[in-house]
Image (cartoon, rainbow over all chains, first blue to last red):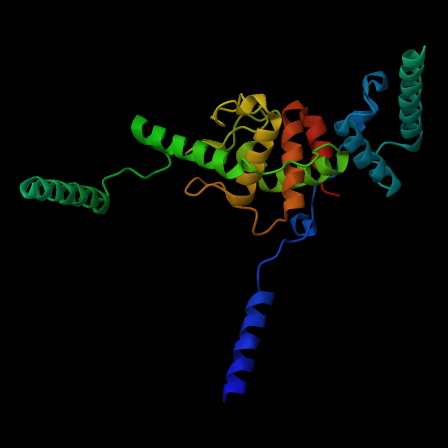
Amino acid sequence: MLNKLSITLAGATFILMTSTVSAHSPEMHKKANAEKPKCEGMQNMDSAKMDMNDPIMQAMMAQCMGNDSHGQGDQGMGHKEIEKTKEDMNKKGEHKDSAHHG
Amino acid sequence: MNTTIKYLIASLLIIISLVLGFLYSGFYPIGADNKHNALTFWVLETLRTKSIARASKDIEVPSLEGSQLLLSGGADYNDMCAGCHLQPGQKESDMSIGLYPKPPNLTLAAKDHGHDHGEGAHDDPDVIASQQFWVIKHGIMASGMAAFGPTHDDERIWAMVAFLQKLPELTPAQYQIITARQ
């Protein structure tokens, strides 16, 4: 009798613990018709004004470069635009570096 | 002495009766399209400000730099927060108009979005960040601000806090790109 009661209590405790609400995945927020990032605006940005250390710029690049790599070129930056932006940002970084050591 | 104590007890009982009578009468206007009188507003605002400041003061703020934090926090903000706390370029929404107390416009810097964060808070970004973390995690009772802690772990909440630090700087175009959930 005591064993059955113990087992019942242990089982109930286990069920309660496993039914605790836990953090849900970000995927649950994803809507079927979610808007894609509108990266065409980035193509018109002056790359000389882009700060490669700015997390905002890095986040935008991640969204738009990621779009292109998934073959959604309509929304993302084209390959040529990405390479040009990278080249411009690298040149800017070299210029800053040489100015620092100059 | 006995007489004084009796008078005090009688007075207390009368006050309690009046308060209970007022509560049960239903006369206090509770609609969100009304405003509290100045005294009630001051009491509730002070209570909220002091409570949040005390509860959040020992929270250690991690590094909030990093583009991945912006992407995670931004997408969550757009899904769960923007309806009330707005997006860049947006001045109001149905929720921001209809809720009382009015949800702060988080596209504005902390010192500009219309409520107090406690003495000296605006001079210390970590104080603001810790308060934002606490509010997102625990919510504010009777205010419309939900507690997201039961459904989102600390890492995701910190990502939202990181996003909030940058939100006042974002243009509508930047906001759209960063918050799009892919």
